[in-house]
Length: 406
Image (cartoon, rainbow, N blue to C red):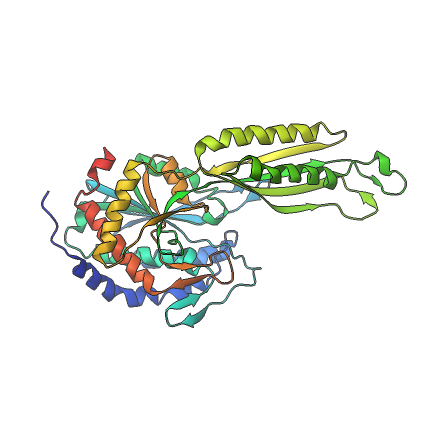
């Protein structure tokens, strides 16, 4: 295969042509509330994505998801995934991934964007990850103008439920492994601009305690206080942070009881657990099972434990390291020096890596304070990261990572 006649200046030129129109979409996209359960807002955002990504030479599929089941057994409606496919017959292939939901639902106070300065935009979803979707759009528009672009086929999946653990999208992500061996995930870069190296595995769990109601004054001794029993259990879960120092155990929600003259018979807590390695999961599961069993030995108390590690840890291997080295060299072509850093956060990159795909995560734009009202994006990094991604796609088109697919 002869080399493709291109240079970094040609890519920078293509990015410069398309960047103003793409970046101008940022305030508009951030103004659309696309919280994970806001089906109307997700639908509006999906229409925007259909409109702009369908201008590329793609086949577009709209994939309905769900309904899924929540931790408390209730049905959860999620939006539609979008899949764009380009040249599936090409010898070289690359999978691209993003999401269009945010953590900010309609009831959240953070709904409006504002410019903090000429290059810093503070808005819901600005960096996580509507800015990442714009980076994708810009990179693909530039790449499709390069000589030799027809040597690379690519598939893009944009999902509506990443912020709630991708319950409806996980089967689609696993299916990707039947068609692809290389993936880029356009989650935000780390706050220092680095890509993401490893990610912790993430699990969501719920404990529901049933006790026995009784009148506080007349029959207190006959009652079994569900809140007290759950509190004892929570302290033991909190102690697991010392027992398993490489893991994280966080109680994020607790509710129960009602009138204060009644011994409460129900209490609920929800947990977030994170682990560094797949091998950490079995001993943690076993230890939690012991705590549940001990709680259920208390007289008149029943504790039900539900949940799973829906995102396994994203670990690295020599193929991932080779992929990052190539991406790093593409960044240098555009005057950007970067490294990669471990993250405690989860993403769909974890599911892709677990499915056997060599995955580079956190290739989106620079910014920070995601999942807070201080969330911001450095707007010039959209073009910067799009240029790097375009160079990387070009390198893959030339077969630079062919050995990783064997």
